[in-house]
Length: 88
Image (tube, rainbow, N blue to C red; front, top):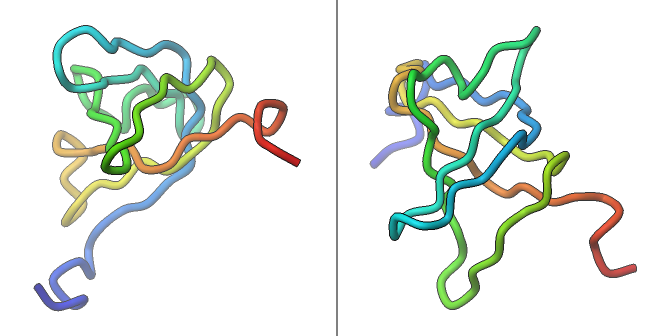
């Protein structure tokens, strides 16, 4: 995959409203631009997690909504940390 393949992708900031962690994949409801919910999707986008580590970010955590090729219906979530719950 070349970086040019992602030229029309959209990356925006999101804030977690709720998390569903009971279906094998973690999905979250997030608020983005101007009240946009779930990166423009009807369903909750999947939150991508690191290998070997699983956690449920608290409400209010912030991270990225990535929409490949600008397809908002294929958005997924990256990161998501809460500033009050990180090691200092």
